Length: 174
Image (cartoon, rainbow, N blue to C red):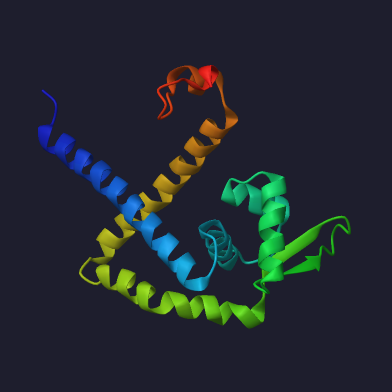
């Protein structure tokens, strides 16, 4: 006999994860609007802030799921807005590295202050062990999300045959 309690808990996590994603998508849009940015631009800035070193446009494309051309246009927009700077790659003169513009970082960071404090306060009641589990869950689901995004973007035969869009057509019928 299956463990009904576990199945219920797993379903609760799946349901709440979907709600979390929807709420965070709305938050991301609202923060991007507040800063006068496109949500993808905001996510790129956020991802750049997590990296220890500047990234190439190709690396930005991989992190954001954009094509190389779209990533170049994204970096162009951020550069025109003064939010990133382009640097020559000392190891390969053909490459350009992208990093956050130091003089604008605090502006984006300041916009995160109030929401960031609110998100951190949610964690106040959790034990260290629970925080470790939450961190592990988020790390694992981020990896699965990246894998699934790559699978869907690859247009593999399995994806085309089994996935129906909102129109009800398979990718092969589009």
